[in-house]
Length: 178
Figure 1 (tube, rainbow, N blue to C red):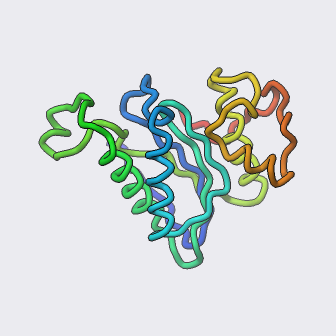
Figure 2: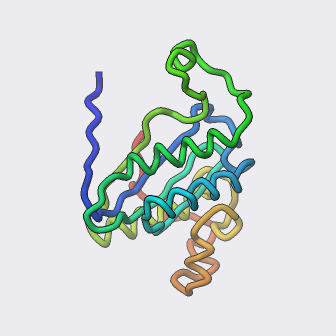
């Protein structure tokens, strides 16, 4: 059995991939307002900075920075998932194990976490977040995907609206985990 270890670095920056249980679902974009409200609520009670975020139909990637002295991203994810799930009707399939544990059948239990090591690593992961809709064939231009912090970067003049052109040549190893 795998030994899952998390790196809890107070005040650190982290890249995450969080998946729905049903990988062919469009639940996240279909209920984007519910997801956004869950994140807003948790940020009020458990602050964190969002450096980059993209929501795709069945998974999302993001880069967060936690406040100094705080390393508890696990609690934040638990609460975001809980609030989002509570807002949905109970129509999903659930395994006997999930029913016995009184769990919803919406999220994969685990998520991918990577501690950002330095500025180059941060840039690579932010780029990976933004290029992801192109990588998955959802759009041909990064600017065409509406559920991305990319638009915030364009508004702040940090990236041009035509960044990555059609997306070729930007997808790197950052964020890849099998």
